[in-house]
Length: 389
View: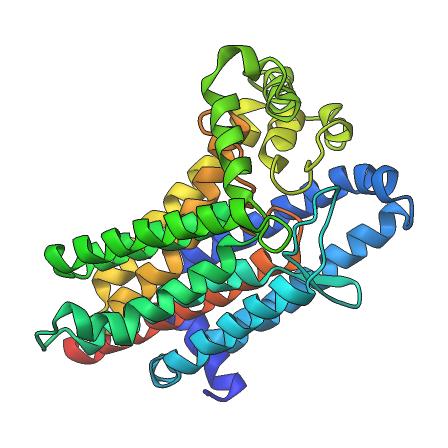
């Protein structure tokens, strides 16, 4: 780890300023969102006042800033050295959550571990660390020819265990884990034939899970039916009229108009069940309009994605190229999925809007990811400057 003073100097001289500015703007927007939705949380839980939720968000952001500084000061060789350990730790954490975790709302869905006032969602951690493991494995086999049996023992079995532990209570995140890891494998040049073998095994695993959930519903929550019902409500015009939450999100967006400035004046935030997380984008558009709220936020995430790709291309180290993509994919995909759900483009998934949605896990993982990406960008620029000299 770099000494603090030296690290601050490197951040000032070499860090991608556009990336830092976007991060700062998203944090500011998150405070506006926290200010607005705090009243809904007060009405819903009736335990704390609005000031409690604002202070909680402040401390979460402060913790996120610390995580950013720490992760941006650690050499990426650390993640490469302990890739297996990090994956095993998150597998154990997800399994522990499946058994002893807490649920929220009316559904018995164990996704959270509570540490005092902070709740952590290990499935979101699993998404990031699984992609980091994929980056490590692609780098490991880049100069060797491996058969599928080798990949199965050293990679696919671990990814399958992790996905299986996540899918029990969180179908959408499990699907995202497989989709984004598959995309990273494709970008990393993984063999197409071996990928087909893995896909076949994955389909067998999904079938076994579905049959087990049907046969033993008292032990395995049948989240597949929930996923199917959401898809049916999305594709059926008749069922869309009875799917209240997406309808309220559309009403919120329509109410915002083109340009508006009404902080905290959202009406639908009091009716949306997840106004501070899943549908936070709709609340922001309702209060600030399609331009100031919707387009600006969309543009910030698009620019963020472009800068992440630029840093990946700038790095000369193959592992770091993949690591930047591994850490950037969850941020951009979760953002676009969250916004697509809010406008009714895709079915409800429960994915957060990184940084802006309430909750510590997504904020911490985004801060961690951006810190590592910034670190890789700094290293690449320093090497480029040394080459020029």
